[in-house]
Amino acid sequence: MDITALAIFAGALFVAAGSPGPSIAALVARVIARGPRDVLPFLAAMWLGEAVWLSLAVWGLASLALTFHAAFIVLKWVGVGYLLFLAWKMWHAPVAVAADALPQRASGAKMFAAGLAVTLGNPKIMVFYLALLPTIVDLKAVSVIGWAELTATMFAVLIAVDLAWVLLAARARLLLKSPPAVRLANRASAGVMAGAATAIAT
Image (cartoon, rainbow, N blue to C red):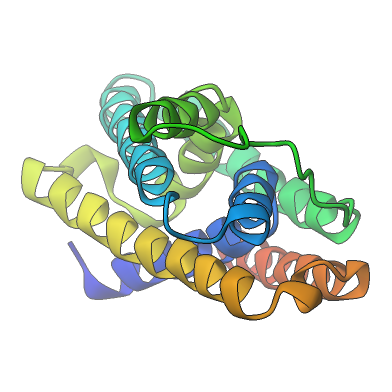
């Protein structure tokens, strides 16, 4: 794949994955309450679930691009609108962290199952990929290698973002409990997401 397209994909995913949402709130709450030692199974399941959603989006959109060109163009503009909607939601996102989002004590298998359920049960992840991919990838020419490059990029971004949240939660607990800090992160992310949508549209 074109390195520019991969960079745009990585940047948009970095913003979306790094924004405080249900998964990040659950992760941070768990680390603040119990420390970082037992969150790796939860993280691994989240990453695997994202790979599933990305794969479904890539191959589903590739089929659509080859079959329904007009619908595909409409979908691209719907994607721009959705990115703007995400920016609005990030700007107005609540700043409370749900402390009970994850079980207090759980085995590795239970943590993995919880992470998988959180990710696969969240269709917003699929919609994000559906909105983003048509704007940066020539899906008519998508290949297994291109899919592998997207997936590897996704793993690299998610691992970096999620481990950074774990580190921040472990070392700066008071900051992450502060509503103003969460609000600032939400609004900075909203600005970047809106900028990405504007760049795509123009």
